[in-house]
Length: 57
Figure 1 (cartoon, one colour):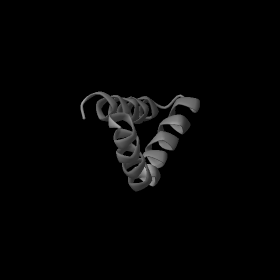
Figure 2 (cartoon, helix red, strand yellow):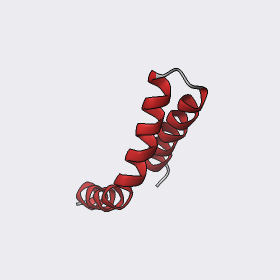
Figure 3 (cartoon, rainbow, N blue to C red):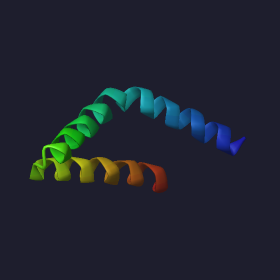
Figure 4 (tube, helix red, strand yellow):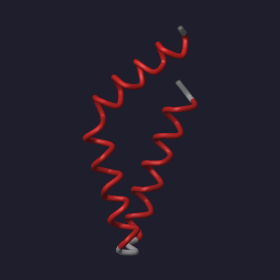
C-alpha cells in the first residue's frame, strides 16, 4: 500500500510540474546540444531537482 500511495503522490506532482520541468529540461537539452554553458547549468539544476524530489520526500 505504501508504494501505491507514493506513486499516486508522485503522479500528482508530475502532472502539476510537467510543463515546468519539461521547459527546464528542454532548455538544458538545447543548451548542451549547442554547447552553451547555461545549458549545463539548467540541466544540472533539472537533474538535481529530480534527485532531490526522489530521495528527500
